[in-house]
Length: 61
View (cartoon, rainbow, N blue to C red):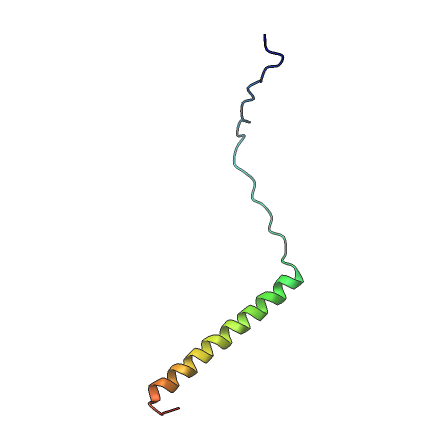
């Protein structure tokens, strides 16, 4: 005879649509990091354009 038994617990019954989760405002540090990342991406894109224009001109370096 077993010393213990396991009970089967059924999953909870869904009671309707799930309420939307409220988005918390982003922190100041995250906003600052986003600004730095955007500025860096813009600089990189501009640098790529300048390098491409330099290659297209045919001038030796």
